[in-house]
Every structure is written in C-alpha cells, then in structure tokens.
Length: 221
Image 1 (cartoon, rainbow, N blue to C red):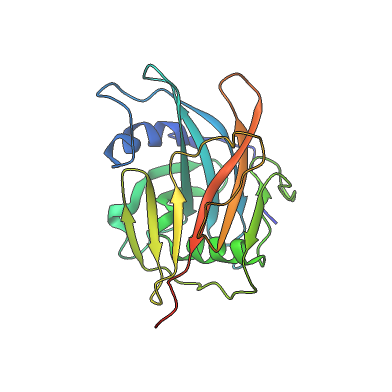
Image 2: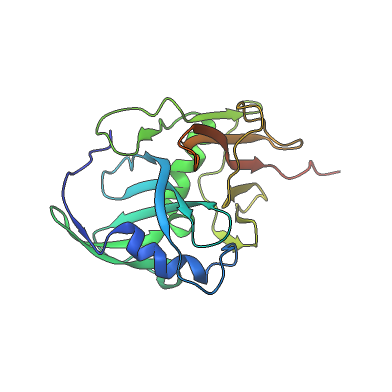
C-alpha cells in the first residue's frame, strides 16, 4: 500500500512540470509559462516497493481557458536505463533523498501496473493518504484478459500517448481528460477496457472522466 511522506521535495513537482509540459506535443498552452495547480489523481503500488507511481491531474490556467492534463509520473532512486528522453527532472526528497522523476508512460514498472489495473489485478491508491484505496477510480475490461504487461512502443500525439504491446494491443493515455457530460464516464465504442478517475473542476466541484483506454487489435482474418 502506498506510503505518503509528509516532507519536502525540492524542486516541487509543479515546478518540474512547469518547464517540462511545454515540450510535449499534447500541451495546448501558448508561449507564456504554465500556471499550474494540482487538481487530482491517484497512485499505484510497485510490487517491489522501489518505484513511486502517480497519475496526476494538473491544471494550467495560463491561457484564456483552464486546461487539465493527465501526467503519469514515476519516482526512482536511480536513473532508469535508456529513458533519458523521458526524464522530467531530479528533485531532493526530504526523507528518500534524490529522486529521478520520469514520464511514467516510458517506465516499464508503471506501465505494467497500469495494465494490471485495467485487468483488475492492481488496486488504485489515494494520491495523498497512506494505505488508502482510491474508491473514485474505476476500471473495466471486456472479457477476462489477460492484458499484456509490456508496452514498449510509446508515441505522443497532440491528444494522447499511445503505448503499444508486441501483439498490437494499445493503452491510450488521454492527456487532456474531460469530465463526463452526465457525471458517469462511458468507454468509447470499440474499446476493450478503460480506467476512469476523478479530479476537481475549476469551480471546485468534483468531476469524473476517462483517463486510459484499452484497444485490442482486430482478429486475424
């Protein structure tokens, strides 16, 4: 179960993201510096207890209209081999020491746990409270699976990040999540599974929406 340390992180997560977000193809802001705040999210547990995994929703209010971004992050005690381009930055944790912070879409530990969440084998954890499941996160899977554990091909688009397994299965991370119109998120037609989560809207209300979709390749003729 996730353990949340009440301590400092220098620089803070939002400071790291202020410089990193504008470099992403799915960032919708202008030339001005992002004005970020945390809107919500959840965590996943690394079974080995080594990697911190957080799915954060951050809001950018630097433009005319606030934009929410889904930013999965991992926190490691040492650099991740071969992931230099996915490094968000480094920070000093008041308890754990230096942390290497990565875009979790490129971190195999986080991707495996996301796949396990879709399949129902991993339990989402509260973002800011230790040892507490997050009951606002839900998942669904058509059929019994299994969902691949490895999605080595990663591609950023202007709307989402596509993680592709060797068999063609795709985990689509929706980088700009939107609240469900009726408050009850529904998977898009043709998807085989999904993850939904909750965050705070600009007016302070709690909203829910799709965060991740699972797409399976069509059967061979």
